[in-house]
Length: 328
Image (cartoon, rainbow, N blue to C red; front, top):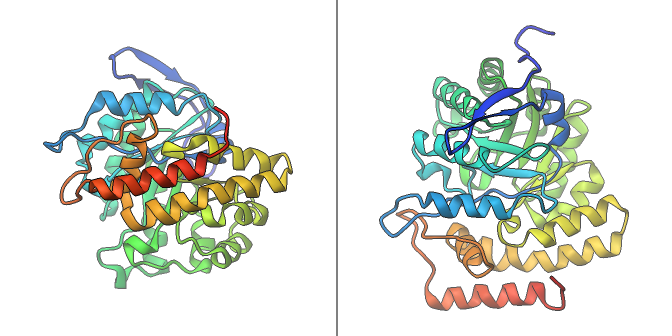
């Protein structure tokens, strides 16, 4: 095994009851499992800004065993920038007590410094994370050139015992990775995938031409999902999967089974959820959609504010339109 490559073994995870269990997925199995649809699960808070752990657990339980590839904890929809490191780790522990192989538990561990990201990543692995989502450091974005980012990801990937996923979301970070840079990152040992959330199809196609064979590309925008899958992407991380997983899984499965018309019909149903909920309302809108769909969104954490009653009504109307005529 090359130097810096994590060993290919299972890890011992402790669930939320304190009872030890074994996640015996190998590194190869985890990488193979990084395909399909992942919901970036929200973090429900109460009015005091405290995590409602029971509601979080219930959401994760509802999202398992229904055709999703797994779950992402502490991503953008999970309000990761507003979570303490201890809170992120606790969410990993709770989710690990629910998510069972072959479903994959991905944990968002990206912080601004390399050392802090390594420490959080190691702790997340110790609590049962299967793979680690690492956002591009961006506070000093003018200094985040290709060489700097390569050194960052190389250091993180070498020090953690689970596969690393690069997270690019330029609309939040203001940091635009070049396809050639992503190609270089894809060749770092233990950097196995990219979550690409720009929503730019031509960019995704350019990235897919430059990454090494076997590197996994997941998109973060439903508007380009079908065409991205055709181009070689292996799946997506979609906020719509938090509250409409049946539509997201339906699209992916229809694509896999070469039912083009049905796949495009699912995408058409999903598009208004992106354009009329995620784009205008952000995380508070996603949480309202969960509340209206039988899940628990809870309150967003300040400074984010809950939706107004008028906005919640608009979200409800979009949800009704998306599901019209479907059988459950």
